[in-house]
Length: 92
Image (cartoon, rainbow, N blue to C red; front, side, top):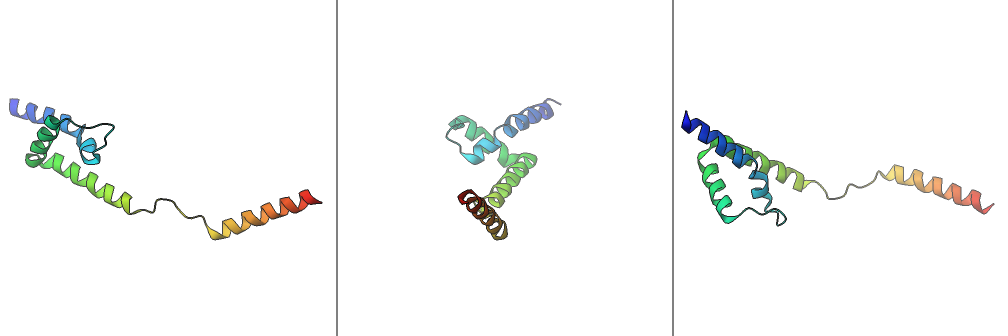
C-alpha cells in the first residue's frame, strides 16, 4: 500500500516535469537533482516513460511542419486584383 502511494506521488511529481525536461527550456530549467530523480523514475516506470515517448513523438512531428505556411496563390491573386481595383478607383 505504501509502495503504491509512493509510486503515485512520484508519477505525479514526474508528470509535472517531463515536458520541461524534454524541452530543456532555459526559462524553466530543472535542477540537476530533479533531472537525476526524473531520469531514475523514467528508467523504472513504464507509464511515465510512455508519456515521455509520446511527448518526443509529438515534438518530432511538430518540428517537421514548415515554420510558416505559404498562402494560397489564388487567394493572393484575388487580393492583388482587389487592391489594384481600389487603387484604380482612387486615382479617378
